[in-house]
Image 1 (tube, rainbow, N blue to C red):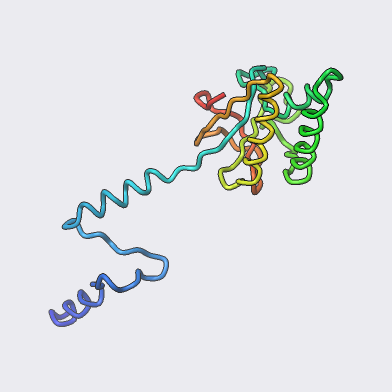
Image 2: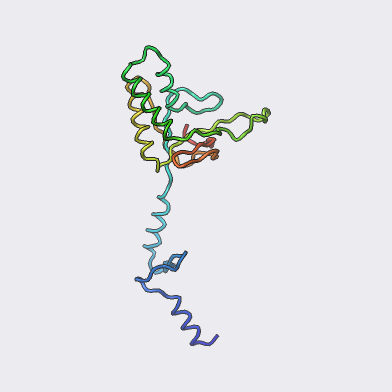
Length: 180
């Protein structure tokens, strides 16, 4: 390749600040602008997905996790002495979730045939994009709090081994360091 060809080729690769990046690619940030590299890296590091889980004090049988708040709602519904107004609000919210949230078919990585393996259980987490579901979950949390059930909201970006996923939730077997 001649010197003239190399210069032309080099100029074609250079892009002005006003040009769009090539399709499927991005501009290379020259080392003479380290502040842009730091800013870009900082933005990428802070992009994390934070899942939410609503829990109360009772442990899940067989694992070191707490039960989800739907279990607390079921306890109140099953209690004939529970407040009628709270009972009605819980019924309405559970009906909403039944109509708007899929029921995962799988909560374990092991099959029922694998009896020699340790039984594990997946935990359900709301995706951060499930804004309507999360708003309804906070509504249910409020009702349960009023009935004396303390509901905690766990936030986690590493929920565990994914067993199920849909538009609004994931079910995962928790890692040892996952919030429980």
